[in-house]
Length: 122
Image 1 (cartoon, rainbow, N blue to C red):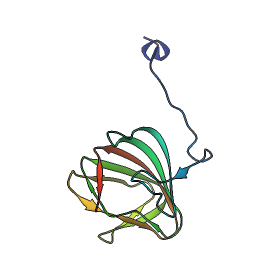
Image 2 (image 1 turned 45 degrees about the horizontal axis):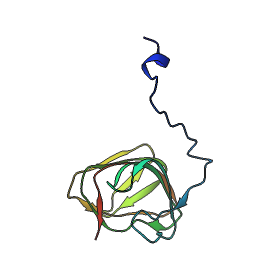
Image 3 (image 1 turned 120 degrees about the horizontal axis):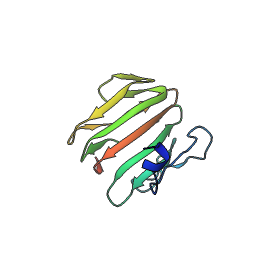
Image 4 (image 1 turned 90 degrees about the horizontal axis):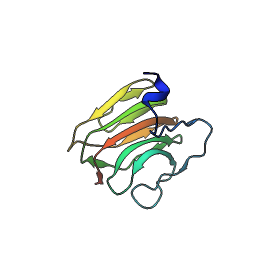
């Protein structure tokens, strides 16, 4: 079966993550300074899905606990996680449900995030 036939009726999202506008990162309420995001396929009610997340130089995520698996891929720049580990471009990171952390981007960073459960701010 041709690819076009097997995908008939299915939605395909194609986006340019480098040029399209990111919006203030307001997933938990008020926007976090220095962070912006671009939801790709995200269900706000469930807190699940995927999105691109951009950190300006010096920006940090809020400490949070994972209600489900959270994975991300570092697309550019690097992050320093709460335990001091430096997460480099190309690395894939997976956090188990119940794990807690936050990250800092000293020089700025963009990641692709994949959530399978709601996070809780600490």
